[in-house]
Structures are given as C-alpha cells and as structure tokens.
Image (tube, rainbow, N blue to C red; front, side, top):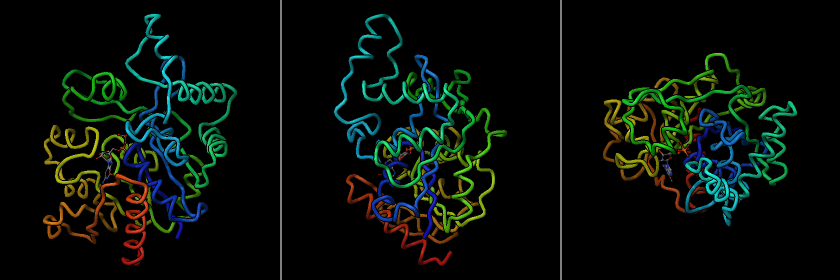
Length: 303
Ligand code: GDP
C-alpha cells in the first residue's frame, strides 16, 4: 500500500517514524510543512523538515522534540555574548545543517533536492519532501498584530491571542514535483497528528486538490494538545478544542478519522468511519503500533 503522510514537526515526525518502521521505504512519502521556515542569522531554517529528518534518522532530541541529540551550544552562546539574537535556540550540529542547506540553496539547488541529499547522507530511506520549493510563510494574525510564525511561536511563546492565519505565497506556490508524483501513486493519504491550523493547513493550501482517500489522526487528546498551541488556537478562534473539532476541520477530505481511547465517549458524534485507539506516542514501539493500527484501519474501510 503506497502512503503519503502529511506532517508538521513533532507530532507529524513521530507518526512518520512509526510508518517508516512499518512500510517498505519505497511505499512511504512524507510531505512536510515549510510554512514555519524562516531566514535567521543569514540562514534558511526549516524546522519541520529538520524535525522529520532528524526523527527518521534517529538523530532527534527525544526530550525537546526539536533539534539534535547530544548537542553542544557553543555557537549560539558566542552569538549571545556578541549581543546577537538568542531567542531561537540552535545547537552546533543543527547550525551545520542550516549552513550547508543555505550554501546549497545559494548554489541554485532546490529545497527538495537538498532534502533528498541530506536524507541520503543521514541514511533515511523513505522519501521526505518539502511541500513546495517556493517559499510559503505562515503569518499569525493576533490581538498584537500580524506576526511571522516563529516570532509568534518561539519569540512570543504563543502568548498573543490568535484571530486567524495567512499563508503568504501559498496561492502561487506549486507542490514539489516529487509531491505530485507521490500523490498520484498513493493509495491513501494520512494526515499525521500535527497542528491543523499551522502545520497541515499550509500543506493543504499548497497541494490544492487531493483526489485520494484521506484519513487523519487527531493531535488533540481529551481536549488538550500533547504539545504546542493547537488547542489554544481552537479556543481563541471560538471553537471548543476536541478531536471532534479536528475532524470537522478536515471534514471535506476525510474517508476516516482516528481518535484516542480517552475520547471514545465522543464516538457517536462522528459522522464518518472512525478508529478509536491509543494515539499517544511515547516510545518507538508506540509509534509503530499506531502506524500499524492506522494502516489496518485504511485496509478495513476499503478505500
Ligand atoms: P510542530 O510543528 O513542531 O508544532 O509539530 P506538529 O504540528 O507536527 O505537532 C504538534 C501537534 O502534535 C500538537 O497538536 C500535539 O498535540 C500533537 N502531538 C504531539 N505528540 C503527539 C502524540 O504522541 N500523539 C498525538 N495524537 N498527537 C501528538
């Protein structure tokens, strides 16, 4: 079964890793959000792409969910001492990724080509692709004005109250060639348990049309996010945060929806096909088990 997974950073990377443990590598393509990308310290930084790649390569920092395991922080400490910006923490190994990516972009290579080269270097077998090679930038509309995504997310630690989102460049950005080919070949699309507003919506905006069956895994368990601001965003937009709200968010696309056992009392409120299972991924084994459950569900609903 050929699968395309749509992923943001932390939640997306975990299920992508589960799928990578379960599917033959040629059957898995992960299309990753690049709306969080930004230019900082003269470098092009792609947080979600790096989180997915580090996770698939076994290099991710398991406690933070971002960055690399066994990091040192000499470069950012030195930048800080010189009076430079220190609000976006980057480890020394991570800096290497951004320096090398920026150098190759300046040579004229595309982000998807560079990602493929990095995946080869890191021994990642499934295909990982940015959603587009053209820049798309998520802008968060807040009570304190419009904020670039990382300004909102990291610098302001999600404090401003959200009133909406804009995805600059998304209307004209084309999906990468690899993404189009993978979508054509796919038997099903899995929306990973990523933030629907700022990780998945930008991808859907760029892909524009999806003609394949889609299933989504809820990133909201018991009305709360495991990590990050998705539930806060739902609440500030006047929607009660819940797995149901996530299913409604994707409704027009969905062939099936996966929610956590903790939310099973909501089961009779869903209109479509659902799977109720443990969706919290605390270990590699949890990731693989959820991936198997999701694949089995896709098989069972004969899409
Ligand atoms: P970000 O770009 O780094 O914020 O990453 P994502 O958008 O991919 O992931 C954030 C979302 O992942 C949050 O809404 C979390 O609730 C969700 N998430 C993180 N870990 C898990 C997990 O183990 N299970 C589920 N169901 N959701 C998770």
